Image (tube, rainbow, N blue to C red; front, side):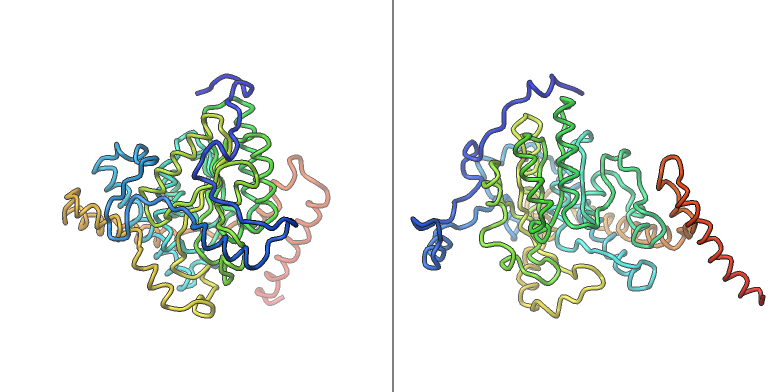
Length: 406
């Protein structure tokens, strides 16, 4: 589906065009410097806004601005969101277990971030394009990527395992923050094509300190790109807490680039769904980029090579466990009589079947062709690559000689 040319797209609104989204600015002295006392006063007087539609107890909270984005949601759709989160968590747990068993080289768990990913993922349309990092397993699920395909890279048998254009879901990006530039460039192209679609880029609080992210903010604002920057602030950039990276809430950074920023309860799947729908709608309407900060928590390790007990205490984790996104939605479903025990029992059986399927698929993955690394380096081949391939072949053949007793 297409619309008129990019010249017909609506002009970008400034940050002031969406009041209540970008937060307040820090007070400064007349010299342009901010004194310690002034900073302290500003911090106390400017509390971060947070969009929340479901409390941790599963109670619905009215929100005049965002209720409209989820008011039409049916009990069946609510159960679907719950199912998405449960199955994503089960798959994630299976992948962690497979790594511990030596079947995967590494795994980055999403435990605790299911609502942020399922809510935002279900807000996208089929023609939107998603640029993930390496932890967006729930978003991949929403885009129809087979969970087993996510594991090939972590097993070391391929470089991704799926066709990005098949689901409009880009391959996982290991380089921190670079996918935001890819998303911005793609979104600029979407605008020039006049397409009625949007782009969403995922990154973490740690990536927000990267220069690539700052550059993508600049380009997207200046070129009014239809892109949503979805930051999952899980409180820890490996072992570095958020307060060691920024003096202001992350969503407030958007105002310095001239576009709206908003903080949403990242453990509230309804709020994440509503806010992302709003942001994507802005993008499609030609109103430019939006920064969404999903305030959530990484319940597990950064990756399976990390030990979080070395830098954070049990009390912190226990406090966030009380805000569990899956338990929150279950309480809401039960309180509203939107489901029954039969639904949960069937979902438990489906969850176990998914774990078994993924486990068997990983163990059945064939070893990669050792010479595949030399393919597709150049479109028409290259003499140096041919030389390196021959050297590698001779090296491999030397092992055969030893094994044969020669």
